[in-house]
Length: 316
Image 1 (cartoon, rainbow, N blue to C red):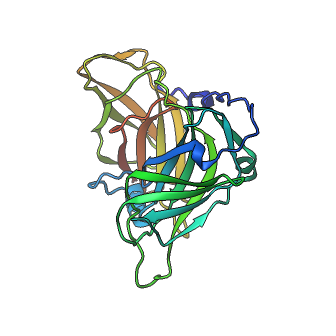
Image 2 (tube, one colour):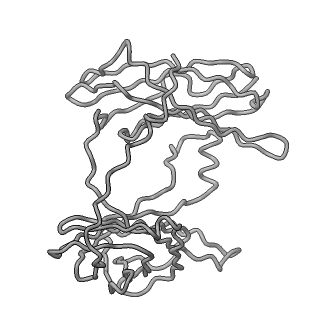
Image 3 (tube, helix red, strand yellow):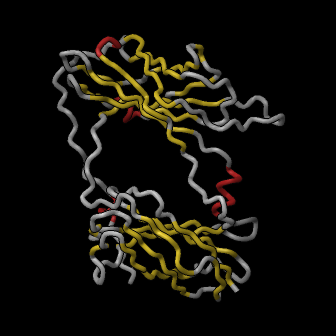
């Protein structure tokens, strides 16, 4: 059953921001900061996967890292952060060979973030490949706006984007892009918990089908936990991808649907359930052309690991 999911399934209601009650700008002495870890932005690809999307991701190389500086107000007074912040990356207390950009948009520059005592603000940084400097202890030296002074944030779990410079382009330098300060709220508990849920493809691993055909595929959802999982409200995305060229348009589409939970509303503890899905080959997928089909759960409250499934269809 195809039951399209509404946009509301993927949109969180806007969170109310702190009311601005002070015009006092944050000073470095008001804050204690840390960057817990860098997150690798490269999409995960199964080492054994050989579909077009997986090959394209491998060819693209490393996507870089993303991290968030978490600054806690350790003073007894509220203060505000707004405008641009300069950043310098340090490795073993020495400046790293990194270019820096803080070209935030007008909305980010005008945003005022109030940080009450004991509360936190976050500053996102994106770090692009290639980084080929020395590895070591990392920290960020931030120059706060409005004369707030210098704030140092240690990086708890040091990491670097994979080195990808080469003899052809020795001039390439890594880039650190600095965002705008924003409120940093604690993570909320999902309204349905899918922690540990896994998805495996039952059939087919790869197949051929007539151009324009509608085909079935089966995915097995497994609950390894000791408690049942409520499947009500779960949505999933179906992505279709086919690499184009000078004579053929690429296919890159995503559709979202509700999981058909009418016959199986709850996944019992230590149990599995097969779900059958359908996909129609787009008109652009003509004879001999491959289409990569990817399936994964989605929605603002669903981020389980191990649930990405993909297979390839060849039009005949």
